[in-house]
Amino acid sequence: MTVSLKSPSDVLQEVRDRFKRRRLALNLTQAGLARRSGVALGSLKRFETTGLVAFDSLLKLALVLDCLGDFDGLAAEDARSMSGKPLDEVLAGTRTRKKGRMT
Image 1 (tube, helix red, strand yellow):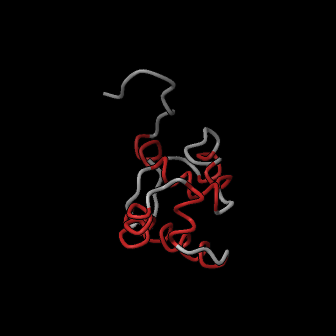
Image 2 (cartoon, helix red, strand yellow):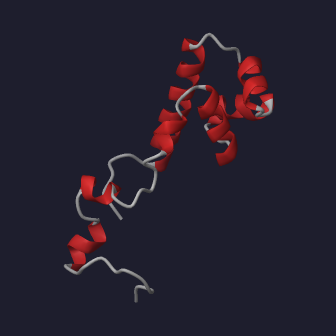
Image 3 (cartoon, one colour):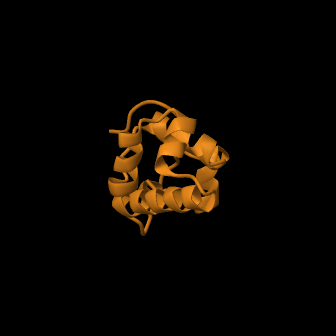
C-alpha cells in the first residue's frame, strides 16, 4: 500500500469533475455524450452528480472524450517504482513478496 493524501472520495470527485469539464469543453450535451458512448443518459447524469458509474461505462465515456489512454498506467507493474516503496514494505523492512499469501 502506498501512502496517498487523497481519499477515494476525493479522487472520485476529481474524476467526475474532469469528465464533466471535458464534455463541456468539447461542446457535448449529456444526451450527445450518452448517445455517442452507448452509456445510458441516466447513468451519465448519475456519474456527473455523484461520481458513481460502472467501470465499463467510464471507459466508454473516456473513449468518446479522447482520454482513454489516461487509464494505461492504472495498476501498472512499474507504477510503484515511481512512487517509492509501499508503506507496508517500509514498516516491515522486508522485500515485496512475489507470490503466495502474507501471514
